[in-house]
Amino acid sequence: MVHLQIEIPTWTEFENQLLYSARHLAESGTIKFTYRFNTSLRPATSLLHINGKTCFMDCADQVQFMEDPNRYHCYFKRSLLPEDFRGNVHPLNLMVNFSYKPFKMLAKIGPEGSLHLIRKNKCRK
Image (cartoon, rainbow, N blue to C red):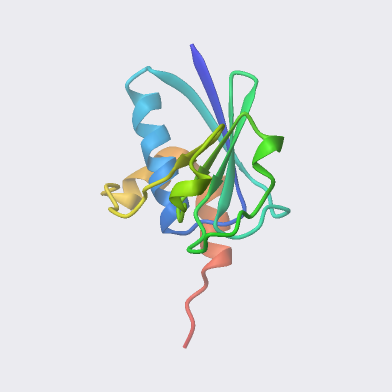
């Protein structure tokens, strides 16, 4: 079985899509999925640990790399120039939010994620 551990710095629409997709695969029995918050990661980034390999996801809307791609088995970049598409660097497209029923997902992920989300995104007056 594939084990996927995801590290995220916060919970935005990008992380929501990633976590929802992982949860969907876990429910189908395809993978075992865990996640944790890692506040040392920069915003718009996340780490995926898949059976001993590490992938970096760079969701920033800029062409500069947030990290050195050579530090990872694969590096997914959202805003990728054609000349940078080589080696372990791959395009990342998270433009369409396919996650639906986000509250159902939160309930399945558990109270730790839900409470963190509530604390980080308090309503502002």
